[in-house]
Length: 168
Image (cartoon, rainbow, N blue to C red; front, top):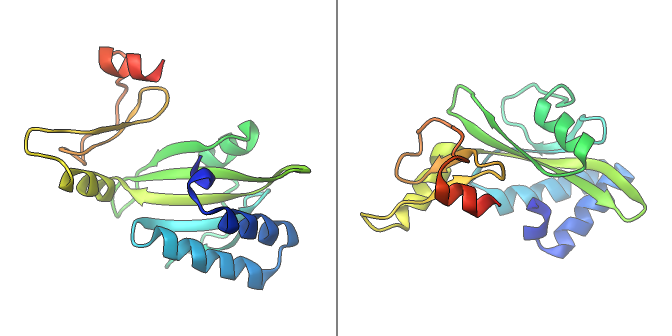
């Protein structure tokens, strides 16, 4: 869960800003999150429970809602983090949609982060030796990024013995 990797104070600020819908608080939290994820995040947004973008780093995009995006709908319906591969002009991206909850309200909004596959592969590859490789695989065995070949196509690796054993 993406929120589990953030400092507790940032998570509380995100929850409070979403709950109160205070534009200044949302902008403050978005600045904090942008600083935490920059330069790795290609796109970051804080959205309400209906998928309307309330704050974030939207860049030149004129997107105001993510309600129609499958990964948002899946994460909302399951109340669990959803990972999707998006094909966009700047290069394929991994989208991570993480529901935000409060103890008394199961779903108040979502944190969305998109990261370029190539950027992840390049960073991972920098830490590997010449004969080493590293695979980033989603829970069902779907290859997200291979460090030695960041542009390699996304595919199902669940049938590979090592991957199958790791995801069980």
